[in-house]
Length: 425
Image 1 (cartoon, rainbow, N blue to C red):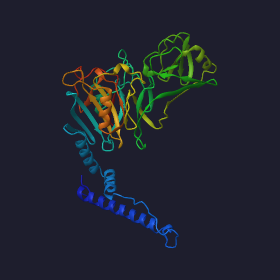
Image 2: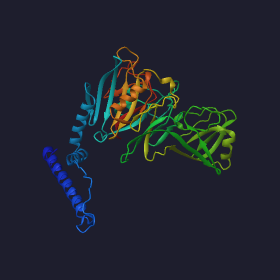
Image 3: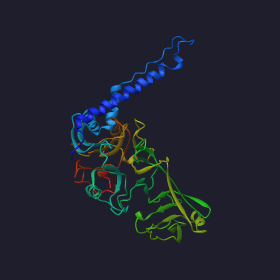
Image 4: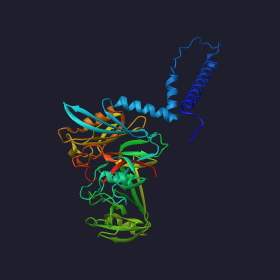
């Protein structure tokens, strides 16, 4: 297709315009400051030692060019990746998407690491989001990462949060396209992915569920959504994604069937979950007041209150918090995942680049990492926020049509969910 300008001439035009604009602004500021009345000759103060503000016009110009010229941004991204990952094998997956293979040594023993780093402004045709293994969004499902990637038209995929091996139900907070599929477990840390235009595209925090049922003049706290019951006193909501029917109610409890915001049935036995509703399960003494007029409203929020969050995927423990190494394994009841193992992690940099990591382990050619080693690695590649994902036998990374690491099971075990970089629909 014909263009009005060739790229070199167009870049010169941009550079000239940006340079002229910067010079104009600086001249205006200088005039504004030094022609101000406070510098007039008739002032009593003859001399004022003012700190000199050093302005690097070259740096400002480069910032403007990097923001407005995709060609320049792409070139800078390429150079940054080369400097950040020396002695590694780097390949281009797509615009703004790099796959890096490297080996590090700990006490003289090797660890194979696969990294994907993404500049999401360059990779603007793709979206980062969690994905369930089931195309029908059934939580009780497990599939290989290759199947998940192909079903979601993804160029990159990494295994996601913990899950119950027997059923495939994710264990921890999972939100996709602003819909909460599962609630938190032990308030473990999660990564929030925000809509374009947000000041911070990513954030990490320990997430608590702030959900309630309102009806008949009463408000009832909801302890979780689509998660295994931990206490008989908890109130849990089961949505159609849980499966065909809710579990039995707890001892001295009952289930309430809600269709189109109206309670239509009460039973202690499993209840078929309708597409247009959900089942509330909890102590009979707590739920009984809702039966007065049978109208109910279900509200779901989180603490912290992440406004405009589009997707959430949990993991644990923290690896990087506020730019510093922070591993709170005991606080998040994750003592069982200590030691040296295969690892998966997700993080983001100060300029909002995404970083996905898969570490091979449990073999002579790659011994795996401790959580502290993984945290230090995430910091070394520039992460200001990062969390550990499910690891061990679940660790598997997919790039451009194939699994690029070496999981213990060839191609990776069937998993519940993944974090994917997929074509925008």
